[in-house]
Amino acid sequence: MMSVLLLVIPLLGAVVVALAPTRRARWIALATSGVVFLVSIGLAFQFEHWSDGGFSAPVGMPWLEVIGVDLQLRADAVSMVLVLLTTLIMPLCVAGSFTAITHRIKEYYAWLLVIQTAMTGVFLARDLIFFYICFEFTLVPMFFLIAIYGGSERSRASIKFFLFTFTGSMITLAGLLYVAWQYAMAKGVDGQLAWSFDIEQLTVFTATGLNPGQQAWILLALMAGFAVKVPLFPVHTWLPLAHTEAPTAGSVILAAILLKLGTYGLYRFVLPMVPDAVIEYAPFIATLSIIGILYAALVCWVQTDVKKLVAYSSVSHLGFCVLGLFALNPMGLQGSVLYMINHGLSTGALFFLVGMMYERYHTRDMRAVSGLAQKMPVWSFFMVFFVLSSVGLPGLNGFVSEFLCLIAAFTATATVDTQTEGLLEIYPGVLGPWYAAFAALGMIFAAMYLLIMVGRIVFGPLKEPNDHADDAEHAAPALPADLTWREITVLVPLAVLCVVIGFKPGIVTDAIEQPIESVLAEYPRKVSRLTRTAEAPAEDPALRLAVAGGEVAGGR
Image 1 (cartoon, one colour):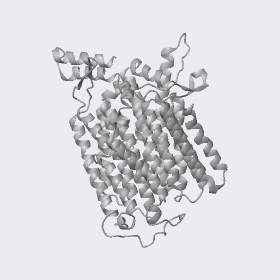
Image 2 (cartoon, rainbow, N blue to C red):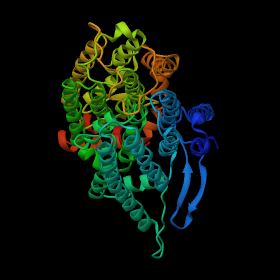
Image 3 (cartoon, one colour):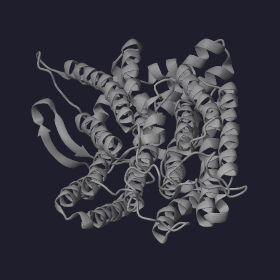
Image 4 (tube, rainbow, N blue to C red):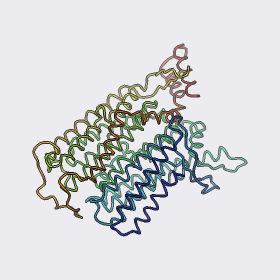
């Protein structure tokens, strides 16, 4: 029942905000998103499958019974941690917008609550149609948030965002409907189609009942929507513009949650649904992710707009997330899911900080400001802290996830033997050391461009724009030179989580271990057969033992 409340409360809150007096809209939105966060905490404490990888009991109702469509909500551990991230970020976005948004206030906060419902629905949906409705509906509120409250190029940014993501999503819908049609024909009796849109049933059917050629076309369709949302090179070009032109909360939502709908789609649909095609094309997808890591990092290096730099860094960082997924081993998937959380915390905080600077100086140009540590010491502390988190400083959250993704890619051609209850488990992959080596360059580049940015705007002689208030289309109230208590309250929870996860990543990785094992269930057997065929003679006794172990592990 609590999962239903996570969707209903924000929608009702959006209606109340739209009808309430303008002066109360902010506080109603903050109270609503705060209540949703508390409900998600309650749901997390009630969740009984943190250790076994199972799903919670289904909650929902029949909708279009004639074609098997239900409004069904269920969560596993991976879904739960992403729901918690969503419900944490949203009240911070509301609180962080109090002084930034000065026109069409009710509409703004109503859209924030609507997009919260849609994003939460993506992570909880276990019916294909309901998943797609929520996945696609996130475009509407974000389009209006950018188009109405964005910067000088907001019109172009919002249209480009909508066209890219909508086009990719339509292709993905076609692929998912093809899967449902194949299932209906295969399970039908006496010429009657047996429709079902249950994600679990369709995943098992596609993985075991469709040939590699069919899976390859389905992979292409799924990647069209999910790769754009990540975004993966070369379909990433909408993101820097949307990030840069969006209002601060819009940029935070994009970085912290909306991009994770793409990586979540890869994890939830692509990996378990089309294993044969994934094994075939994983090297190509991993190569695209590495190109994105390096290309976006080099673009960051020459930026003078701080917000655009952080925007391009998202393209680079999420390349590591995709690389970890397509390493096809448990370490890679653990690192990737952890990266989804860590990127949301660190990069979301950086967008908050850039917005706080912009509210005071109305510029994001690194050539116009410097030495802000003298004028804004508290802001400067948080800026340095979250930059160190983003570059992967050991002891902070970013290090663990990047390290896991790189090690997973490095060992993805090796046979990793572990003894578990007397059974040999084998998790070979199709990548290897060179993939990790080139991706690791992205960590070096990230340290360079982020530390150069900090050196320019935080340290050195104090330099401020001559006219702070000149280009604000809707001037915000005057703010103190340094952060207010409200702004500090927005940043502190993110900083605390960065430290906690940095020192105790097992809070997340242990919880998601079992769901990841189930997603990878088919891969040990399939990849070991591929390895046997391509790399060694079948009569080799040691190889026969390894392959046999892989089949035992994969078929448990």
